[in-house]
Amino acid sequence: MKINNLQAGKIHKLYQNQKKNALEKNTEKKTDKMDISIKAKEIKEIKASLKELPDVRQEKIADIKTAIKNDEYQVNPRLLAEKILKDFTRE
Image 1 (cartoon, rainbow, N blue to C red):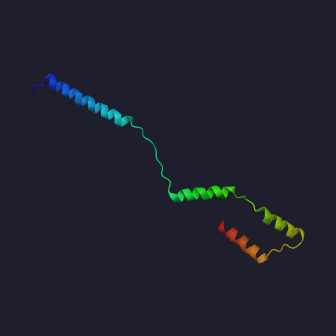
Image 2 (image 1 turned 180 degrees about the vertical axis):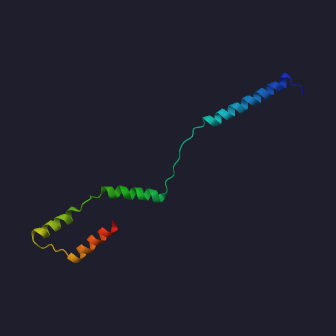
Image 3 (image 1 turned 180 degrees about the horizontal axis):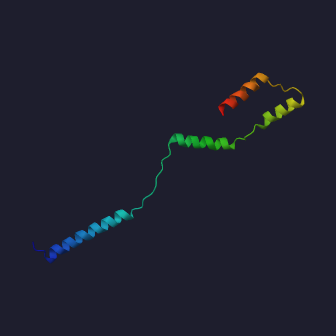
């Protein structure tokens, strides 16, 4: 088989086009993509609203302090014992 300058030029052009296409594919920007479901967005919003709530309910504490001060605070010993045992057995 004989290769003349015309065929060599075509081969060279084809090779250059392949090389250019390969470089273009490699230089495409690759980005990470993350899709968050609607449920995940709702959970995120709920967590944010929970963070805004105080850790301690001040008015309940004030009511209990007042009841203790006035000797009106009553503890049910049976309920207290049940809760202590429940907590103890969970560990």
